[in-house]
Length: 332
Image (cartoon, rainbow, N blue to C red):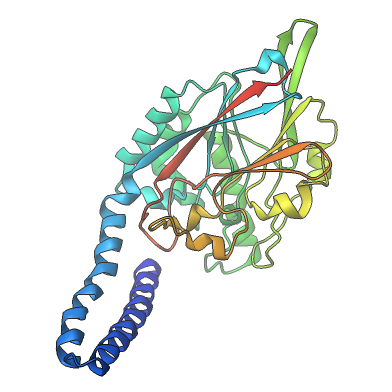
């Protein structure tokens, strides 16, 4: 019901804006000698465009899957990790796949085809409650890689967008989300890290994957993470951070730490890109794709994944579900 109301409001706002434009064009045309009524009536057909676009995004756009490969080169990446493949997934919002289990199955097939060394998930497994996981336990358990599946919590995984009767009831739901991630075989990094080793020419080489609870620079989203605690003792020469919200990068990672690469999601790129225009840029400075800056700690990277599912707006317009393949390249 919330989704229907949201879409109706958006359509109404767009239609009113377009109607005002049509009236303005008809008025200007009348000043130039044309018929106001004729121009106005001919312009009304454009009001069909918004619902048609949303219908496309709901029936077809949200089922599209994009596999994007990104190479990250650094002198800190050991030679033994050259070519190491990390598949980055985010924002499943499993409620999105009700009656669309085949689409999730195709996503898993695409992931398997990338032959990843490691799979990482940067949060928002659910939208409102842990029960969303139940129909997909077996499918999600089939995600596998030699170095496992590592994950972190996103803002939706704390189940704030539900009408819980008590705080204890919500806490129980959050605990169940964590338990479900364990049930499907994922290692949930709650302010902790994992060191991954390979045998190099001069002995063991290590990269570190650090994961934090949600941290956001935006007040409307909960921050529960502790990056200092998560990174303590991480011995890898190259460090990867899993942090759901990309605003964390500029607020607490870039120039503040020696983390080389941060992987995020959260924005969904607003599930909308039309003629190259991305509305999410109005809210997020880093909204989609790869970013790189040197803020005194060498080049630091951020990748923002467009996610797999949807919230509020049950459509994807020009923003397909994304599977990102991060390929590490040693610059040594």
